[in-house]
Amino acid sequence: MVQAATSQEYYYGTGKRKTSIAKVKIYLDDNGPFIVNGKTIEEYFDYKPWRDIIVEPFRTSDTVNRFRVVVKVLGGGVHSQAEAIRHGIARALVVYDENNKPALRRAGFITRDARIKESKKYGLKRARRAPQYTKR
Image (tube, rainbow, N blue to C red):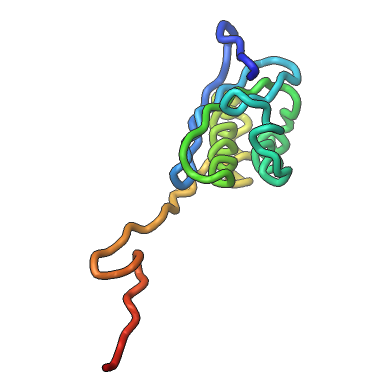
């Protein structure tokens, strides 16, 4: 388990997607480790496309390898957690430098994706799935 220094200055952003919530802190260290829930990003997200989703805001704002990132993420599935982390990183980059906002907004990383699972309705099997109709 990798520990993070807490005495340094950091920029904070909260990201959300479906039921996942990511609390992101970016520290001004050159190329420090990327920590997610106490593990490195390679240990936590073993599938490369998920890691690519997470680092997209850094590529968009030309700040790759400029920060050390510490993330606490909970809830949801792995893909939803990756997108919540992306949202949190984008918000933290805007706190760091307001000039990053137009590029991040164009890429769609600032806007919270509000789509969540529709709640179940009584008399139905799921939100919209009705029981099978029988004629006799």
